[in-house]
Image (cartoon, rainbow, N blue to C red):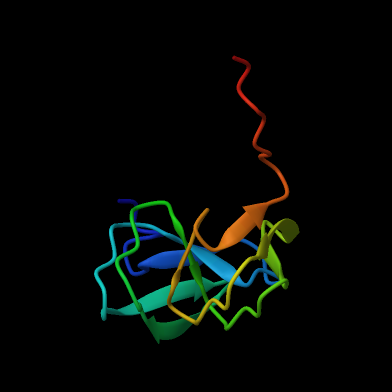
Length: 103
């Protein structure tokens, strides 16, 4: 891991984002440091977060936009609490769409 990311467990890619990206595997109940520009926030994970997966840095209401890269990447399909894993089980992607598989 580079020295630029050695002190952080997750990173927010844009100040408008409501999710961070895990820089390593995060265990449930772990207190982590999240880089947010030149400052950091500390939060506790609610469940295990795999490397490079997203976690909420604020509560996200159902139907609310999920922001990464400063862009809407999906919509919450259920309430998402701070520190919770954000993935296909609780957001509907606005980038990847399911396509029916032909018979």
